[in-house]
Image 1 (cartoon, rainbow, N blue to C red):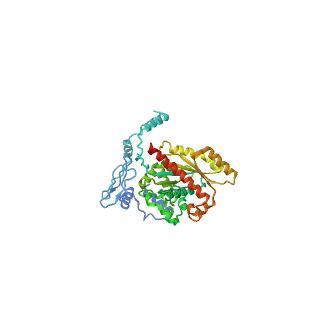
Image 2: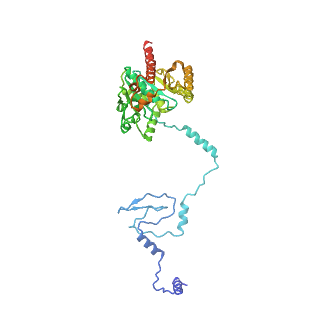
Image 3: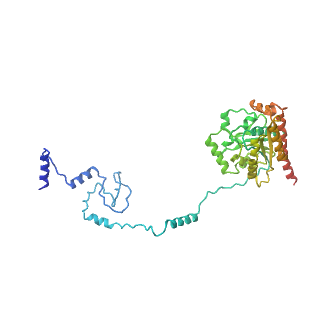
Length: 402
């Protein structure tokens, strides 16, 4: 039975007519497909890698077929006839036989060992950090006011020492290294917070210099505030302090302060990059503590930090201690003060009695020296400042005599 008879029988079975039926051969279908998709060419299976896209003279990109073994056929060239079934096995036979990897030649343990040895032989090109010579700061004196815990009156003492030393005829720069940026409030400077945000040491990155942010105060002390920064800026600044151990020394050197000037550094409580920077340049560290059990327990930690950051520095003259807010009406406060004096001896620069005028001076935006010059707190501050100055410049005189 012919193919035409089969098709006529099917049409009769389903009630149709076979007169309109047109048989389409495989060659006709291929020709129709080429007319609809001229960019598609005949492909053969092979191990040859695909070629990149080629631009035709008309500018259209002709993409290589997925398993292309020959270059794409241009639409102007008539397509070749399909390969015969006998040709396919011959094409496959041309491909290189698959070679299985020899997994058993060496154990995994042995291969990993070889890789480890190669890794150790590789030379790692570590970034080279340009080391600058440490600047000479011998013409100025630097005091770092530090504490192991917060709330001990550290910023208040730093501002008080700065004001007293200025009245002793010294040029004084009070520099705030504490992100709380409270030092400027204790020096009687009423500045709009937005102005403070635009000016501070935390902005001393890139080409900015400390000199750009120094501000005068009514007491004659120059202050360099920390500045108000967001968390991202603060972290960037702290990373810079960690990456450049001599950053503060370089900045102070570039200020070109007058001979005999005093720099008072206010630092945040506890270990930090700020404390490390401050103790790397300080000639004297003033440790502030309260006469209570919590503050007493933190003093050994401060001693360890001092040993770590000031070791092998001939220009560090030692630490001196201030016991703040001593309340003579309370036995525990008196006892702890006595114990600390007994342990520290001459290293205690003095005590500051609890005096309400110190807190009131801050509330009225004044220095305690101006607010209550005859008060107990003012006298205590003056005595401590003179002791610290004597420690600084007595050492300098002994070095000159030697």
